[in-house]
Amino acid sequence: GDPADAGLPYLAAASFGTHPGNPPPAGRIFPGNFDPLFLASFGANAPPFPGFQGTLDPAGNALFLVVLPASPALSGVRFSVAAATVGAGGIRTVTNAAAVAVR
Image (cartoon, rainbow, N blue to C red; front, top):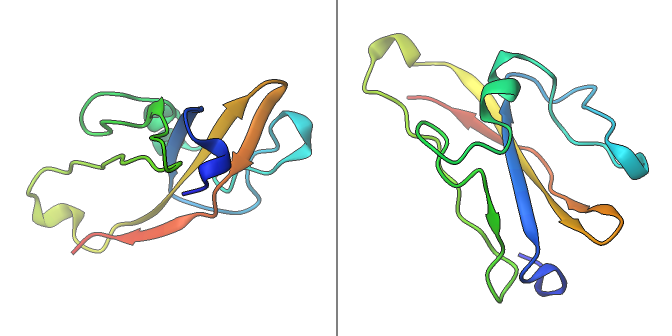
């Protein structure tokens, strides 16, 4: 986390790809693609994406989850997650994408 962003609202999203990314306002690049997973997860706050929107804690951290059903069909699925904080003037900080592989 970044203490400079403490208390700011954030939005997270999952995506099946990380390139080329979505160019948001202010020229920052969100490392995800506009795919069905992105559209379903962006700013969600209910299963299977609880906490994909919220407010950073005093240390500038947040916890968001991807809650998947126990299904062998999901084994090997790969996706990424990333988040951005929003402050005065729009998007403030964008995280790197974190890769996830379902086992």
